[in-house]
Image (cartoon, rainbow, N blue to C red):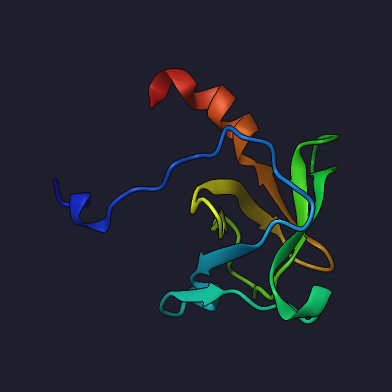
Length: 112
């Protein structure tokens, strides 16, 4: 009951598209919440660069350009179209990457 006022996010089970616009609510370096919506590449907007990308495991991630900062790992990567979680951010760089939410959903489906 103590956290219900914060709402919840839905994991996407759909296919991530190249060029899909995204945003990332984050707490970089432990600061108050900030929302990453801009990128220094791809025309200035955060977008998916590669819908299938190798993370710690082959084909586990999606890759995207979005200006995040250290400490943002674990942040949800949200589709600007559906506002669903399409990935969980865990690698910063060019490009950034996050574990594809459809893989996570399959693993925890029975728990949610």
